[in-house]
Length: 164
Image 1 (cartoon, rainbow, N blue to C red):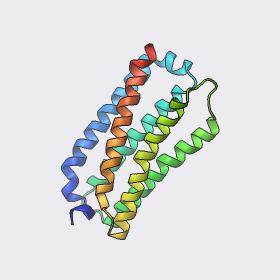
Image 2: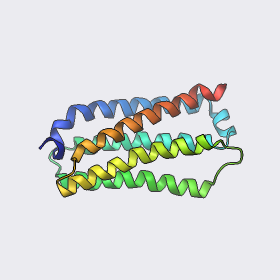
Image 3: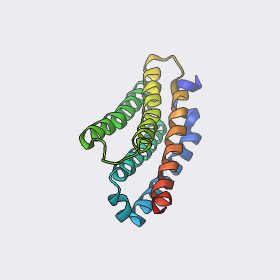
């Protein structure tokens, strides 16, 4: 079945790997160009880090799906681990950091939603692959869409909106 074998997804994930790598480069440029402003606004370093994390997870997901001959069980465990790592590390950083003084609620909520909307479907995809039922790799599609939409939005904030 297409949902439970990685091979039919290879072209999509080759494109995902390229797009994630390109956006990672854009993120580094955005932060480098505006480093002083990013560091000057208390909530932006975490947002930049979250965006970096989401893009690395999308790239790692593409790599995992593209590994030839990998079993659905191995891929399922990798997807679960990747999704959980993203969400747990973000949660730990948020708890350790706390809410920066004067940070608008949207600067806290939007990135957390992006992380959750990327991580939860990856965990669901992994669990579905392990179970052999429930949608399989189709669960990765919302993770990809949320991750890329969020990364582009955050890159825009870090590159352009920060200067307003």
